[in-house]
Image (cartoon, rainbow, N blue to C red; front, side, top):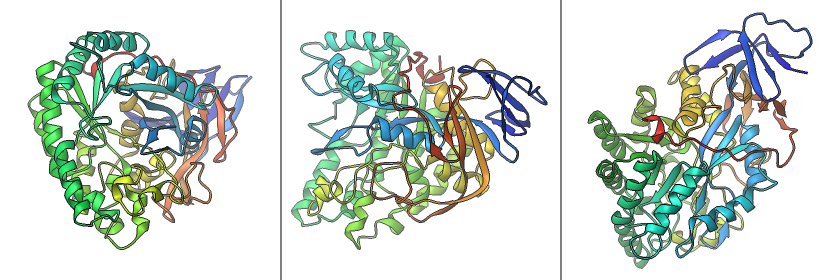
Length: 466
């Protein structure tokens, strides 16, 4: 039977209204007041907000890093996403040097096969275009776009592992421009950072907080400037991932004011966690907050929030890359360079953004939907996602704005033994979640089927600029 959600308040990026939502099969059929309940399974949404399912465009599931693998695989990671109100994720395929993109894609499809519980897309991280002039790799980019992988990740950090030089970046960006694909860039000056890191280790500065002090905001700002302008030279649209500080934001804003095709995201950790409060250099527990870019000084938070409000920053994603504290972060007990980089957040994105955005008066409910659902779907070529509108996928989130909830590792669905927001009390949480018309989360508990998630073939739309 078709499902009818009655008595709720529908919130889209462009407005909200009291309306019912009818979906049959996998698709939203009608949205309007006082729809007839006859012949339908009725879900009472009194007191609830009816929003599109969240879209998290930056995750790292089952990802190898520093001799270990991220703690969430496609099963646990996508279940945690759904429990937190997110019904679509985009994960990163990492091409290894000396191997083709096709080989990398096959590996990641193997990781997701039979495990993904919500719909997912893939980015391709390019590290190698092959021998000679790179024509082999550039041709592979065409194949990837034809398969619906319409964004390419470029690392300006992690020398000798993932980092590429400016020449290769230009080649990839130029080809992406001809394909209408989007270039996602990890913007940090990796060579300078490596010099600073080496000096710190030589001086015996090995504790976790030195990770943050070794990766300056200026190194991120310089790389942000360089990436955007190489993109301009190459004719490509550029999307800066996990932008973390005011200096890098200034470079982005300047480029946008000049009319360049430059977008960026930030993440909850940069909006609510700070170097002073969470990495003061007092304990090993601070390894929980070792991720890249690192935590920044608290004064960066207000400019980031303002940039979300005025549209300079387009998306809030998580960079979810979880490692257990007890047996994975501990690999770097005596050397911060060996602490696996990343933190768990896929389950908490919507809670944190509602509490510190909407409840704090920094975001309207509509802006919350824009940043967490609608803009990510639009920018990354998923027109069937991101809005409560007839014809869209029935990815529907019933959000309880009044319920109080304490974030804790003891009850989370993520496969880590800690939370970056342990003990935080928030008001507002997902109650029920539908994915393509199927109830997968009921009363904040996962009830869906493992492996039901589908790989999305995304459009190449140059980040929505085209």
